[in-house]
Amino acid sequence: MTHIRGPISLFTPGRRVLVAAALTALALAGCGTEQSGGGRQSGTAGSSTVSQQPPPEQRAAQALFDRFEKACPEPGVNSRRPPGASKPDPEEQKTIAAGEMPPPDPIEPAYPTGPEAELDDRERCVSGHHEQRIIAELQMLADPTPTKVRAILNGLGYTDERIHHLTQDGRRTRFHIDLREDGGRLCASGLAAGAVSDVVPCVAAAEGPFKITSEVRP
Image (cartoon, rainbow, N blue to C red; front, side, top):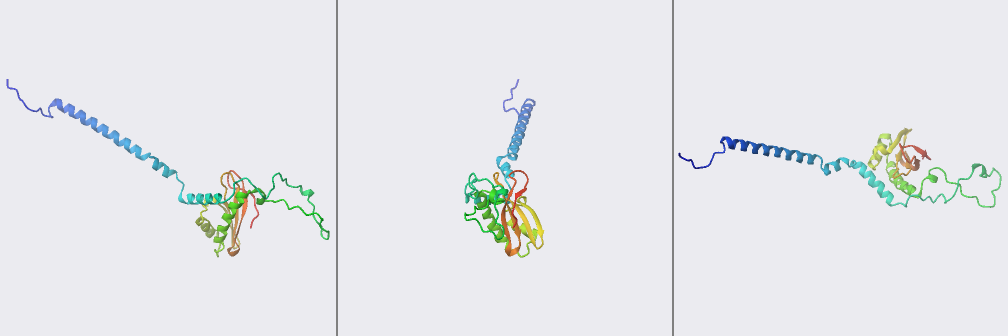
């Protein structure tokens, strides 16, 4: 019998089965790699971080608030209300009638009321920074309509979520700005009226939706 010496073809029946099995295993492994790689791409930390970041205008507003707070004293101190001072009884307050002489003893200073009594030194300091920059812009606005006032406030970094009660009052526009931060109660009450524009501090509820609890309107 003659023996054939030489390589056996890959396409003999036995080898076909082995090659087909190997190709199938490689295909399955490749599919698994592609799926896991795609899953990692869709769930990367970078894409999650970007989606959770606040919009640019909110980041700019927060940077503004942080800058003002760093320039002001620590919270909790109200130098306009001496420690332990209590509000006097209105019935005990003495008034001077017309024609009467004032008493020889000095009259004690009146008890502060409104936002002055409720806001601490830090909040009044922060309010002063906000007031200056807002008033400076509003004084240059010749026709202070609500639309124009909102545009001015947005340009200064105050987002629509912080602007409230923007209403026309004759040829003027009134508004409020929510300046609460970290449980604070500070807000601003503003009047856009050209050269006589003004902004003063007010007090809002510490928690929940924006609600004014104490105010002296400009």
